[in-house]
Length: 82
Image 1: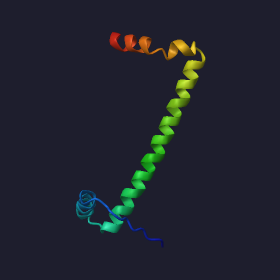
Image 2 (image 1 turned 90 degrees about the horizontal axis):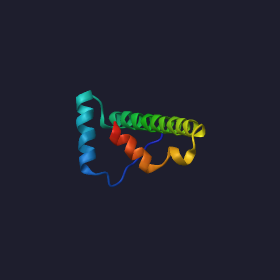
Image 3 (image 1 turned 135 degrees about the vertical axis):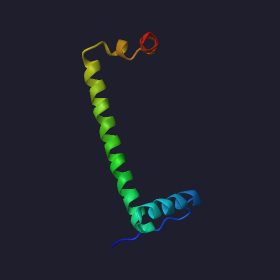
C-alpha cells in the first residue's frame, strides 16, 4: 500500500487531526485517510454542482436576449426590488 509524507504541515492542522482522531477513536493515519476521502468527494460534488448550474444558466439565457439577461444594472435593480 502506498504511503504519503506531508512536509511543512501547519501545527494547527496536525492538532485538529489529532483531536478528531481521538474523538472518533481512530489512529491519526486512519483519520487522515477519512478526511482525504471526504475532501475528495466534496470536491467532486462541488464541481458537478457548478457544472449543472452553469448548464442551467446557459439554457435559461438561450431563450432570452443574452445581453439583457446579464446586464448588471438590471440584475442589481431586480435584487433591490426583492
